[in-house]
Length: 359
Ligand SMILES: Nc1nc2c(ncn2[C@@H]2O[C@H](COP(=O)(O)OP(=O)(O)O)[C@@H](O)[C@H]2O)c(=O)[nH]1
Ligand SMILES: [Mg+2]
Ligand SMILES: [Zn+2]
Image (cartoon, rainbow, N blue to C red; front, side):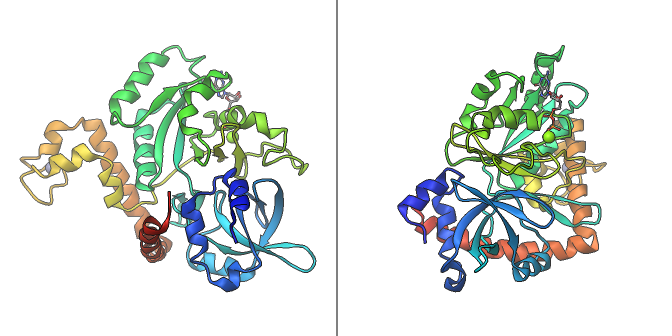
């Protein structure tokens, strides 16, 4: 189904050998006569799919719709799907390949809302204006990492911030050295140079952050050159930069970039263990606490309280509490069970990918 020609074409919108390996796991009844496409935009009742050259609207087969609902998930931007043409030439999505990574958030009722699938890097956009909040940056970094996505903190509006350097240093100091932090003016071409390391062909990025943080400005800057010349959103007459829905765009460097609407709240959708693991210092020190089950609150002999910055510790505890709360809502409990089931499957497939894929 995927030959070298179609691979080349689909690689333009982020196809990798890992995804190709997932296609071969599909039942042949679905794979035969269908094409592999990527979801580049979602609306309520339809999806825009891309084949590396052209975008087309499609709808979900009712069976797949039902299956996704049962699994407590939904199709989202960045997903790879198998679609079939009806005799009337309508395009129908018959199957979704289970995502390699997914960024999701939890609504108040515990429902899981996927934001972007198959992403390598999360650009965590935060304005150097009143949006600036190092605690939030720290939590977002942990949440991206817990989803298996590499975080990059992008401080925007560096051109209008009086204390940009000071604030940059403040975030820098708060995060592990391995996490890149850049300050940019999203309106200037220099930002594209600063972000070049994450724009390689085959890479998929997602922009996350508050409304007004500058996500769409960056998306336009990074993908602008292609937007008017056969870019993902061209020629459908619906306006190019919708921010109410999520959309995937191509960068001339070869990367795909997913813009998302503002995150008023981004509650963790990862389990406590994965989130906790991103606070390595806390976890290491916890081994030295006097009590095995130390909560690092008021216990005597607590090594964590003795060494970790109190604000960082509070943030760590807030993150774990949020994760726990999300798991405890009725829908959250169902979603959690479904997720473990799905991850169990994905985990064994990943092991297969590793053995079988040339990447
Ligand atoms: N001066 C300046 N303005 C910016 C920058 N980034 C975004 N803006 C402005 O901030 C506003 C919100 O940007 P937008 O990209 O729509 O934010 P979004 O909600 O995160 O998509 C717009 O008026 C942008 O022109 C920046 O780096 N410098
Ligand atoms: Mg926007
Ligand atoms: Zn302790």
